[in-house]
Image 1 (cartoon, rainbow, N blue to C red):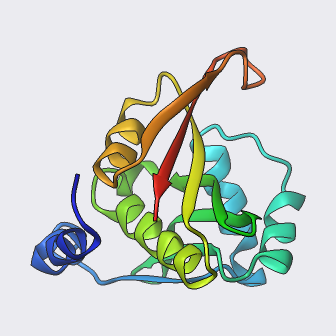
Image 2 (image 1 turned 180 degrees about the vertical axis):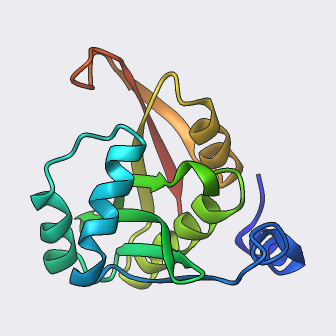
Length: 166
């Protein structure tokens, strides 16, 4: 597990710009980004109703973020304050050409920072049992498995529930 400082230093050492060849900027999701977010959702087979992106943009502006590379939206994270002391990562998605290049890591670091600033003491998320890349990212950030939810997804796949103490 990396500390937040180690993760950021690794980004400064090249994951952020060296692999991507252009600077990566993380910012709030804006209405102009909704079409790109829906497109990414389709690319990664998320299947969410497009209205959900608009709702997150409107109701959770500090924890709904996009990663922009060269003027193009490379990924997004949707989070919200689940309880007074817990943040919840609802959906992290990165365009396939940008996967494995630090985009998901940067988005997660920024949403976790926002949760801390909002007073959260922990963060939770669910991840498909089959999504090994995501398991690796979340474990590296310090998330630990706290349970399994059978048939969580519409296709019947189970979800691993993970939590991080902030």
